Amino acid sequence: MNDRTALVLGATGGIGGELSQLMVARGWKVRALNRDPDRLPALRKGSGLIWKRGDAMVASDVAAAADNASIIIHAVELRYLWNVPIRMDNERLKALLGAEPHTPLDLAVRNTLIGLGCLAS
Image (cartoon, helix red, strand yellow):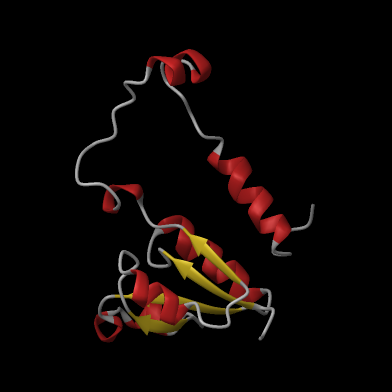
């Protein structure tokens, strides 16, 4: 197993795309799924990523693309994961997180990049 191989789900998006490019620049082999990689723009095809045909919402596609990868990064845009909007209607959750919870995404991404060796701490 190559310990510098990653599968990035959502590599055509903003966060996944940037993370993928950082990893490639730092010497990682990065695989990415796309339902139709032949239709990717030339810029994406020349990005250094290893494009695999598949859908991030199909477990067998993800499992095949992840074979021998040391890490899987999930950066799929949330709107693809649910057919209905998420509504926070759990009163205990609201009490714990507040009426408008937020995820410190920038901190999570930064810590992930540091952990992968893509950024200095």
